[in-house]
Image 1 (cartoon, helix red, strand yellow):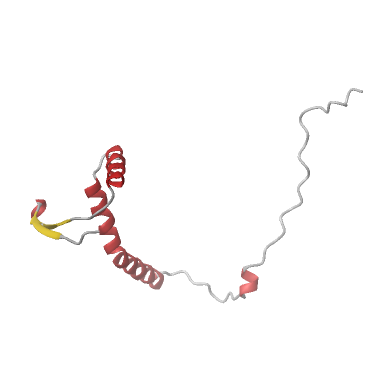
Image 2 (cartoon, rainbow, N blue to C red; image 1 turned 120 degrees about the vertical axis):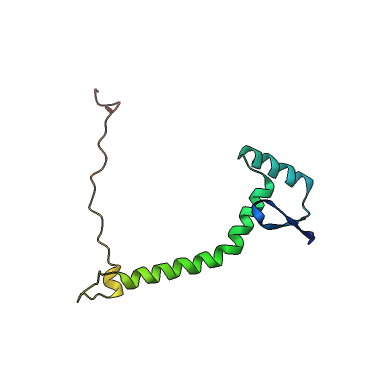
Length: 111
C-alpha cells in the first residue's frame, strides 16, 4: 500500500481524506465489477470497511455496557435453586427408534 493521504473538503461539510493504495490491476478490475453488480463503488466499499474496522472496538464496548446495564436492571432471579456444572450438562439418551418401514415391495416377495 502507498501511504499518501490528501485532505479535501467534501460533501456534508465534512473534511474527507483521499487515500491512495497500490494493488494489482486485475484485483481492482474484479473489485470494480463486483461493486458494480452490487450497485456501489470500490471507494464506498473501502470506506464502509474502514468505518467498521475503526469503530468495531467502540461498538463492542458499547454492546457490553448495554448488556451489563440490562443484566443489572433485570428483575428475574434464580431464587434458591442451585446446580453443579455436571448437572447442567447432563444429557438423556435419545429414545430408541424403530427401523424405517419399507414402502416398496421386495422383489422376491411373490416367489
